[in-house]
Amino acid sequence: MEYTSQSEEVKLKRSKKMMLWFGIISLSMMFAGLTSAYIVSSERRDWLSDFQLPQAFYLSTGIIILSSISLYIAKWAIFQNKKQLGTLSLLATLVLGILFVVFQFRGFDEIIASGYFFTGSESTVTTSFIYAFVITHVVHVLAGILVLLVVVIQQLRGKYSKEQALGFELGATFWHFVDILWVYLFLFFLFADDLIK
Image 1 (cartoon, rainbow, N blue to C red):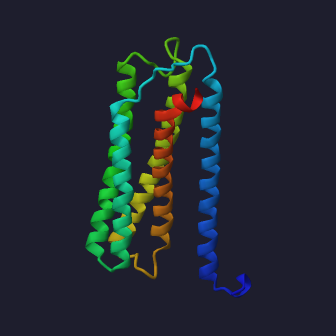
Image 2: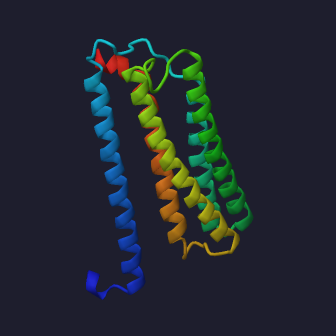
């Protein structure tokens, strides 16, 4: 079927999906640039080679993975016309997203309690990079939480079904992206010293 002969609704769906993917690609490039800068900066003499990730980051990684699973269950339930399960799974995803942010800030508290600061005369390049990565990612997670909130409201209003789920699919795609992005960042920080050596 040629693009010109497609219905306006199909064209609108395609354009919205393409815009989302352009945004995702742009964000991916930004984080790729940050990780490249992190690797290059690791050559500095004041680089912390023995920095340990806080336990809260491990917990937040598990939480965000669970949120992707609950969102997948929500999609399955909506497509199976199981509205109550879909709504509960979406609410679980929203709560897990909020918990993820809470544990990210607990991770910051652990880092500071260990004597590492993000800014000021007592800061290091390493911790400043981690701060930049995590805060930038948390901003995107907060945007994802807003998206999830809209999706939950639309679900409660009965807007989604197997045939009509564009808003859900766009929101889910963005949420899965921020989930995958955190797992990438977590693994990068976890194994960065081994990669750099």
